[in-house]
Length: 404
Image (cartoon, rainbow, N blue to C red):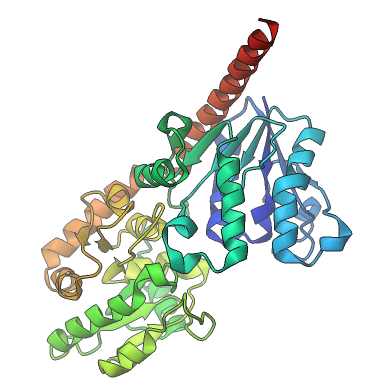
């Protein structure tokens, strides 16, 4: 089988979809020696990857197809044209047996059997994420197009149920395939490496860590409230306690990004809350050194940050909403993210109970080991095979109907 993969998000490899695509491609190269793969995308010059001919990190051939010159540099229009016309045409030109779109943008008029990965349906569920008429029109298009996909992959049972409820797609057309933490997320125990990482971000050795975005559903202002409640309880015995939030409120502004700094000031913890983007190379060390990792999100399609924290052996306090209980299982303290007292109490339990903290560290490592990108890749190959078989069966039924 020859499989074409829409590689549009290689232009933004740091995004969630870009990370999913990269990890999946590398794992497919490890586990599948039978099928042939080709990556289909626009020219990568000017992106993080530059010219794919000079980039040795892509495990499969990359075929670049230009979009019409009249829409170049109009990012949203160029993306739409690629998804709906240029990409499917590239798949036909490459003579692939199957076309995989790894984000919620299947072609409305597919000419090739198509698998689409729908990570979540956030713009259809959360009004704040609809961002105007153009997003609404786009979501109507891809919602209708999803019904024409041969098979849908999603990343959690909760996301599957949302797809059934919101998109009205039959459950038998959806396969749940979990994501995983990357191989780079492992416990870092070298004290020099840990101290160097902490120093780069201005944090001491007694901090709670959060990473995962500052947008509304991440619930960061609530985290600051809970931390303030906790700090004022513990400041006499732990005066150096900090909350380290990966992100920069100065760079993410607007209604979708509530600024947590006024809350920190109001609750008198501004000097205890540290902001700063953590570079990829430092994430494992910062996670490993944290006294606790906290993730109070109100909605996730999967929830990769707590799993990455677990892979580094961090004790985790996590929201009990949406897909997150599937990810963390019994390896985290799960709480109602809207309950400030419950969140603060869970954090206090981890910080003040050495036995609990060490138990959670051990549980984290065991839980994270259950997920792997190689497992994800094997299950994705099975989905490809099923989709091709479905397409052939459907074609046979259509031919038989025409003959009758």
